[in-house]
Image 1: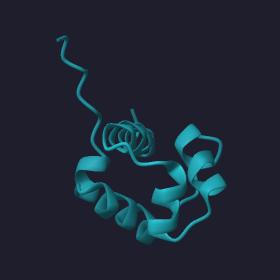
Image 2 (image 1 turned 90 degrees about the vertical axis):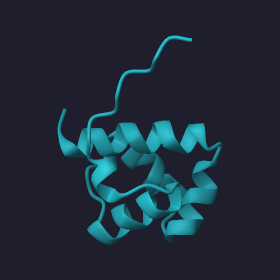
Image 3 (image 1 turned 60 degrees about the vertical axis):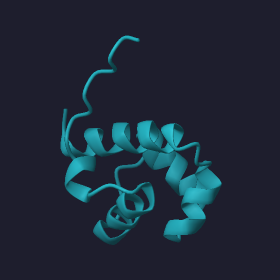
Length: 76
């Protein structure tokens, strides 16, 4: 998994876990919701380092942790 793929996977996982709507996260980090959706789905690879940092901060994690491959979910 590339760092970009890891970032996308972590973005989706953390956003859903924190019950944050795309629209709300996009507004917080200063981008349009469709752009965030495209990035999350992988239909665009373009996101600035500043925006990546802002997304990580908004989700309450470090940028470094967003770039690491997510750990598999533990069975409950």
